[in-house]
Image 1 (tube, rainbow, N blue to C red):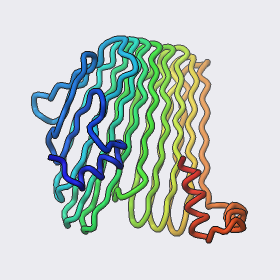
Image 2: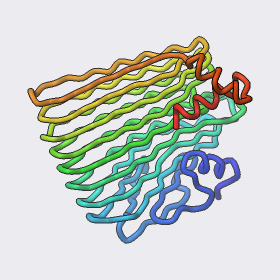
Image 3: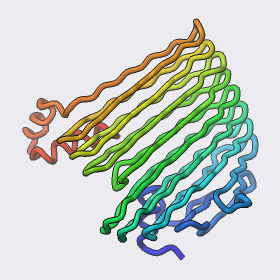
Length: 306
């Protein structure tokens, strides 16, 4: 039975007030809490119990899958492996995310390894939110790893968000993109206090006319630290773009390390990085509308991370 704390975590990471429509698997405190499948989406527990296999039939349309993870026990640490097999021509939305509520003194941690295998012309929109809270002294740690393999003509859009309560995170994504396939990544991160966030993207464009766009927006407050790394490998006629925009505040530290590698004469690759403080004229403009300085900062940050 899901309690009120767990219900709040589900609202934060998956926008759920009730059980979702369609296929879902809710993992709570290290075990499957509830599950539903459909005629086109099957969910199978791995033999070792450390994750699930998801099978989406070819040409499945207008269906969704929710797979949130929630942890409310202080001191619980786990590694979960989820594999997604998306059939040819399917077009689905996958809502993931992990929420930790830690009121103890021990470390709570979730490491999720998600592997996506999209067949020819399959399309996936993948939404992942990470959130932490609790009034204890224990750390909330999340280390997500994402592996993506896109077959010919496949399309995947990843939206990842982490804006509260995670003390340490190391986020790694690797992708292989075939002929005519596209990977779009939109990352949003905010850190505060002594938090640390590291992201690392490696995208291999090996198919002709493959494409990727990796965009990261982040805000670093207090004494928090952030590191952004990305490497796009152009191994065929392809188009790749990586961009990191960060707002730095207080005594925070941000490092942006974009890299592009062209191994083919027709590889077209671009990288951009910008780190800076909130512009004084932006604050002044909002303060003339009646906001104080803190309210103006929050308004600017909200718009930046939207």
